[in-house]
Length: 390
Ligand SMILES: C[C@H](O)[C@@H](O)CC(=O)C(=O)O
Ligand SMILES: [Mg+2]
Image (cartoon, rainbow, N blue to C red):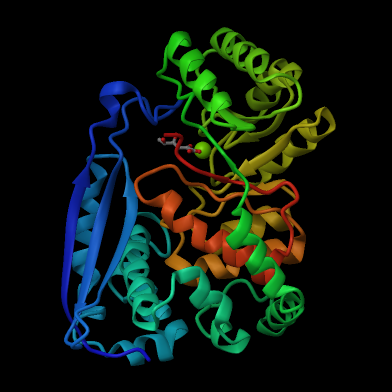
């Protein structure tokens, strides 16, 4: 049973100097310091449990997100946790509809990252009070209760609550077996850790050798800054992993639409499963055009790590602009909004391969994707998550 009134909210600016080693670097983010705005919620309940939530940032931006969390804090403080989760849709909408703060969103940018951090902390607290990991809380939840956490505003033209209910009802079949499968075998994963853009060829070779030794079979390489470098690095990694293993490429929004098509046509010989974020995350029709040109070459489009909200995902799906959908546990408005995107992806039969890798993301996203497999998608085909290589 959920319990207690939220009596304290702490938010910390946590940063790691990853830029010093080029870790996490790509064609647009050459000096990322992996960071997080980290929220801790305390209640007056005697159990002493706390809710921990975060959103991922790249360094200096963290102080701005911390400010936004503080600006939203009054929506959470002194609230009874039962009232929050008892009307989670209403609470999500209260946060995202703040009459003054929504002007600097709405449901996008810094204020939405702050919403994600706060709501992630609420979900964590709820799961802890129920004595379950988050994925299990979601899996065990009655479909109607689960749907009551989702704000369907702006997406009912593609997914009504009743359709979502039918999806969840169908997902009940074989649920126990899939849960057992997850506990026994886990979820398929890939690594990006060998091939950040700032790494030398020697580092790439060394990390790739270690990854192969550790049994990795799916690899992602950063591309997009210099074509000749990309050709050399992609050849190197493809030669090392062989023709059978899976290779993905990630351009982190570097290109114009025609440039993306031209560039990827030159990298097609390395047989990438997908090109990720080929252009601006806001350019839905641009993604559709790139997809139309590259799918015949066997290259899918993956995007989502910088998609603001469910509306952008809705339109990407409507426009057939992506073949792999990458939710982000800390950019969308927490579990609430991620649930709506998982359900839309199921309706369009597009596999979800979440974005992760940054501070806390791999840990968070496991819960969402396990729930997706057990209760929604019931499929592992063309699906994987990303885990940090040790
Ligand atoms: C700046 C981040 O490291 C970014 O490159 C992550 C990313 O695009 C990914 O993991 O995918
Ligand atoms: Mg990416």
